[in-house]
Length: 256
Image (cartoon, rainbow, N blue to C red; front, side, top):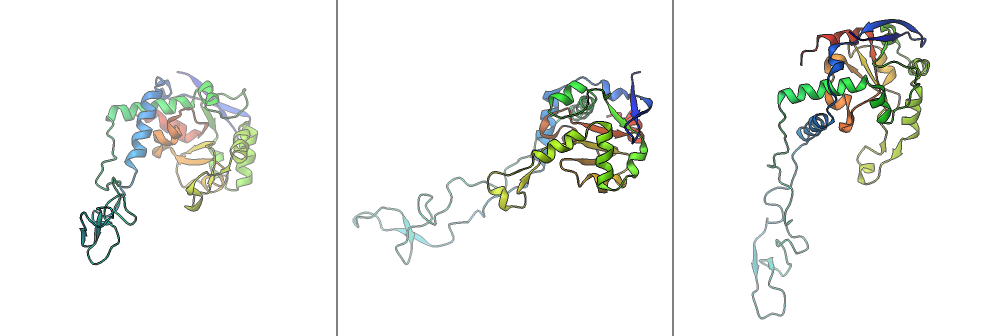
């Protein structure tokens, strides 16, 4: 069985640990993309106008002979309405709330996608190809002592990441934060931040979650809640991931 280094919070190698069998899963970018897109589709909320929108009035047409277009008009007036080509008319082909956005993916494909995305986080070439920045001397999968989970201050978390040699990626996400193009600026998503480090911990209640969430692009997730969308945002596998030792050992029990 392969082994990987375990780093201390000082950035030094403090030991090694066996790499779980899940990290030997073949790299399947097609299955990963399929699972991530299906998850995004299943999370969409149906939307659309009321079936009677733009048609809540009595209309008639004047017919020929008045020198005006033969469109539907309000019964007691002359205002054109209801037809899609009129001002204040109904929409021609509106989005329909009854449309089915959900996509079905086989259970075995979902399992393969999650394991394949996990295996990609243990490949240095795959992580670098995704655009993450780190020191070449690091060994992957990247595992740190459980003492990292007890750090709560944001400044201390950032300092540990610098000692590990991956602080560059937090700086990359900070420098890459831009104002979003389009109307999203008015809808509480004004800024767009690149995806950075994923910290996998034993429990979501770990103190490090409070400090690390303040760093741009950094996420903290419990090992039991890992999914393909978190490991491969946007369907692009190879996210720079830091595992605590206890969380890493739990992965050895993955059967699906």
